Length: 359
Ligand SMILES: Nc1ncnc2c1ncn2[C@@H]1O[C@H](COP(=O)(O)OP(=O)(O)OP(=O)(O)O)[C@@H](O)[C@H]1O
Ligand SMILES: [Mg+2]
Image 1 (spheres, helix red, strand yellow):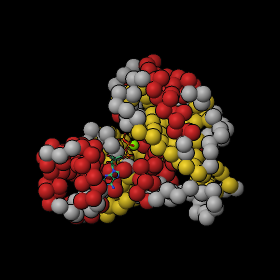
Image 2 (image 1 turned 90 degrees about the vertical axis):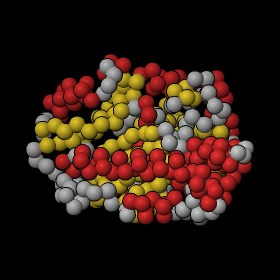
Image 3 (image 1 turned 180 degrees about the horizontal axis):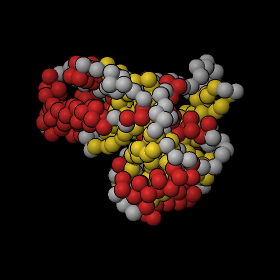
């Protein structure tokens, strides 16, 4: 489900507030092969809360990023790019089973009650949720909308960078494509993207995203509180965060406690919310509707001891995800090496690249 679609070879581009990341995947027969990746930090103020503020600097940064990828040079000008979750609306409509034309009309009518800004101001798309077990009376529809102002900003910046937009996709849809093995989960999964500037929660069940939200708790916030509490420079605090994590120096752990408490409270809220709002036509019985596993991604997931800490807090298995799970394993000389730690930062870019390879 994308805002724009145009079929041709394309690479994935993840635009975040403080970084750009690129990944390229090529289709070989029925399998996908990873060929290139790259990352570039961008200064504060170029993008703010997912909204482009300085198009000129963004265009320059895109050129610099593409000129310095690891692996094979990216020759195509076609791009699949993500749209910020915090500026988008993903929701589920529950409708009676209707024919496709009636469904489309009902979706547009109902969507107006779910999207908090007028429909004429958003780009809007919808998709039937494939339930694990069909309910003959009810269908669930995933709707996605992003304000035209935001989408047009991305589209124009990419055009100025000399790129052709093949698809713009709301970030959670890209993340699940990279992380969920074969894109199916028989029991609900909670995916947590713990990034530099924010944390996103995504619930994936059956074949679809069924919920997503973003909060401002972030891994950079951990660095900020360490610097503040221990009265040290941000660079030193960042190094301590990475070297000590939750398992090292108690002073570092204690400094991070308020942010970790906030994070665990938010995870609890999301688990509780899901329990009471599970879409009924997912075909899951009461035993199967509990979140079964939590997958972590985003660079912040590398915090030493985080997965164990969350496992013991929630008594749910929490694991670091594998954003390369749906790719073919190769030992080709051209395949770039993306280690486990870095790969967690590339979930979005890889999901977008997979979308490009599947178009
Ligand atoms: N080994 C590590 N231990 C702890 N934190 C880490 C580690 N490696 C990276 N990080 C943190 O991960 C964050 C960067 O993650 P990521 O690349 O996923 O963010 P982003 O995609 O740029 O941001 P966002 O998605 O929030 O816009 C930084 O805050 C960085 O300090
Ligand atoms: Mg990110």
